Amino acid sequence: LDIYADDQLRLPGIADYTVREKVQAELEVTGLDSSRHLISFYHEQLRQLGWTPASKLTSLRGRSQVVVAGVKVATQTPPTKSGRRVVFLTLDDGTGQADVTLFEDVQGRFARVVFDGWILAVRGTLRRTGAKGVSVLAEEVIDLGSDIDMPKLWYSSPGSPGR
Image 1 (cartoon, rainbow, N blue to C red):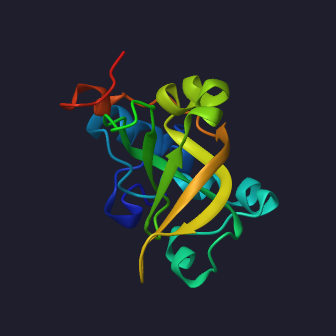
Image 2 (cartoon, helix red, strand yellow):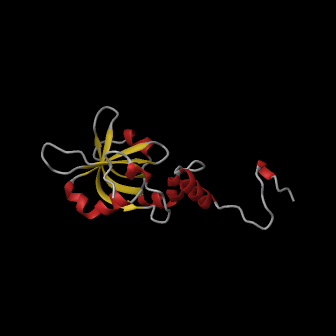
Image 3 (cartoon, rainbow, N blue to C red):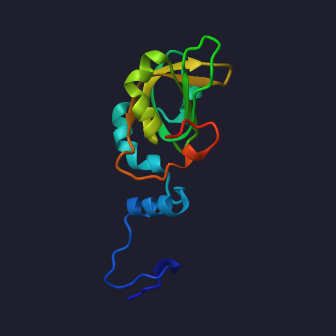
């Protein structure tokens, strides 16, 4: 029995972490998913939803229907001249970041998911914002990460909506 396989101590009779348990432990200890991107656990579910990785968004035509997904890295609700509330999300899927816009007509149905969820899928319409810029106008938001606990570190950042 080689207990030093892979330069890591392995104790007889004690099972190693599953990949999911390892990532969960990384999140609990460091707040980061260092061995594997969290979105990788959802690839099959996302394929069924018609997911477009963030790295492919700029190659699509404006007004295309898309599904983007990822770990929420930013939520912003800046004041607007009109006084209407707009929510901006940034999702990281490991291939890049997707910017998402939620206008008031969508916010009421999905506010809890947007602010409490942290691994999200968004169905919406691609909007060209410049030569290489794109944003997704949200029509539906789905919480994918309710099965993984994550310390909500972003709530402590200045300007975040908090709880």
